[in-house]
Amino acid sequence: MIAEQKPLTYKDYSTPVHINWCPACGDFGIVTAIQKALAKLQIPPHRVAMFSGIGCSGKTPHYINAYGFHTLHGRVVPNASGGRLANRDLTVIAVGGDGDGYGIGSGYFVNAGRRNLNFTYLVFDNGVYGLTKGQAAPTLARGMKTKSMPEPAIQDSLNPIALAIGSGYTFVARGYALDQSGDVLANLIAEAIQHEGSSFVDILQTCPTYNDLMTVKWFNEKPQGNSRLYQLTEEGYEGVVKDVSNPDEIIAKKAQAVGKSYEWGDRVPLGIFYQARLRTYEEELEGRLPNYGTAPLIDWDVAHRDVSKLLGALR
Image (tube, rainbow, N blue to C red; front, side):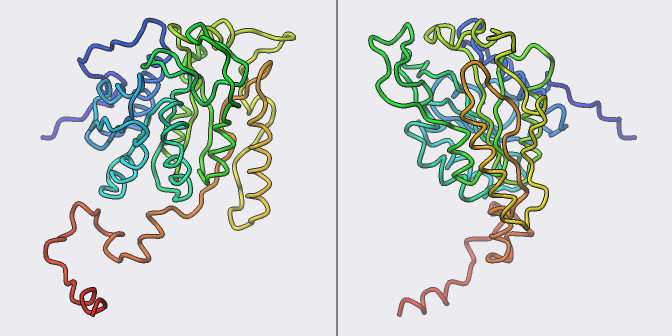
């Protein structure tokens, strides 16, 4: 008799590794949200692959009970892409900081969106390079000066949401690491994982050690009586493309999302800015590599392929 398997809980995705982030860091909330999202979807740990780059967020795979890959600075996306292409039976999640993804990794970030590969990319966005002592990251606006900077930033900030939409990601959203209203971030991450295509979530978080501008107090303030952070759905915003065969609707939704992404300051929107179920990179490959639709690359017998046609073409 086979014993009935108990439903997985978020604790099944935790590890005994001591978490050594600074107290009150937003990373804690993000890791918990990832664990809750995986439990919500009931994905077995051995079917999950976590990839990370360099930075404070790079430690995430150490704390998630799943396959973990700690890669090079800015190279998390190409490594995660390779993992997904090699084994389509895995749920692939890439994590990285705003410096890792929008700085040295920006070229990979853009081209991953173009492919529309079926994976999820979560960016821990705190405006600074936390692991290397608080230098201004690409999301810190010109003129801003944190307590760790000798002078204000002299470059314009990057808009992750607009860049992701322009790059081709088909699920683009923003979350908040310290949401106290329940499992809002966990549910958003779960939606991103379930989406078929390239999913991107920019997650606003605090860095209590170096960034004294984007603090819990700042996020929780109510300028002019309204909460600074609000959900897009609260104001009737709809970012999902209903008819993906209609290019005009896709363009209109993208334009709407980009416009909304520049709302910042007294009001900061959270939630899904844009979503469309378009043809994925894997689906494109199925038409060009007959075996790809039936077996992952890891199961191919690459040692006994007939390469005579390729050699003949070189003559």
